[in-house]
Image (cartoon, rainbow, N blue to C red; front, side, top):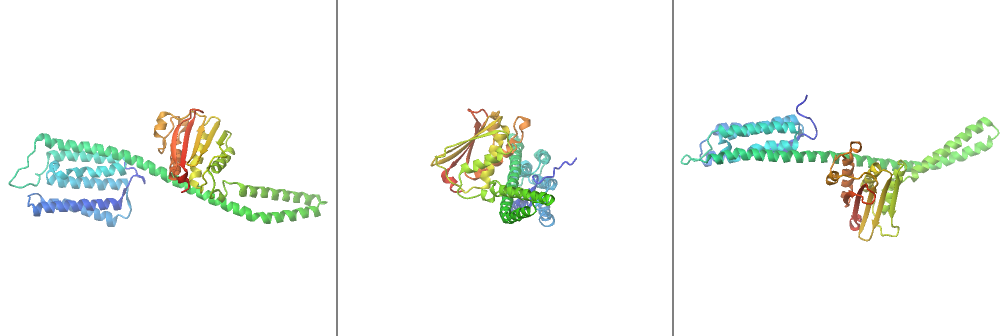
Length: 423
């Protein structure tokens, strides 16, 4: 079993970490040399420089000999482990936990908590705690003027490691939590980008198909005319007539297929056009679902109401289709879509007659990979996250609730018309 989990989501970005280490090394050098040459305090100057050189050589290795842009989970563990021992040894030479710079000992664990897996972080935290305990009882004296003595009460002295433990656990808990959420969100956004790339590709293919269908129209018409003339000439020859009738029927079938390609707005490149209304977009989305679903779609809108025209986009189409698709998936029989518009706002309300959403789901809805309590209907979260993100990117505000009228889930998508003009 591999203890260190290898994943693109568990890694350290090398340039950033190398630069941070250079800053830390520079700070250590300045501190050691100022204390030695300016204040003339007595401490293990030579051993302190050796400890700092360990950090310098390891950084040179990462900078010039390690070619990757990211440190793997395993390599990052060893580098962070080295940082803990290097700084721990330097603190051992300069006062242990009484050294005011001891707080930096917990930084490697903080980096680990937000970038590496939990097992790696647990090991680093355990080592850091052991090091803090060791430095509490075993260390050289803090560099201090010979004429004075550095004395603190035991209560204060032993409160230092205790405060470090609290800070270490607190920062690592939040680092792990926020790091995990960031990785999930990043994975969901990557998935969304893949989906949108496929949508753009399909639209492009649809446009090419429509153009090809238009180009084939004239040649097929010519072939059809010639075939009909040949059929008239050889009407007395039963075998030839049968073959020609088959040819004409197949030409007619080809024409029907080409007609569908040119008229289907979902695959036509002109689907993403300028100056259309939300009503047009929703109508086309409903048509696409009615072809594959046995459920009833009820679309209510006021034909006389003001409707802001927009430059339609793949994001809006996919976002609306995502929520209508969810309503279709979780409804029992009917999906209700209501479009309300005036001079200031445009609102789309999507409701269904399904089981609705629990309070637990409503409180967390919109987060990626949120699963429905009903295991048979799991996977709700990613689709809602993608749809919500795409629509919010296009200035929409979304509200989620349960429909009091129909009993199922309800989503309201609201635009200011001034924002729709920007799309």
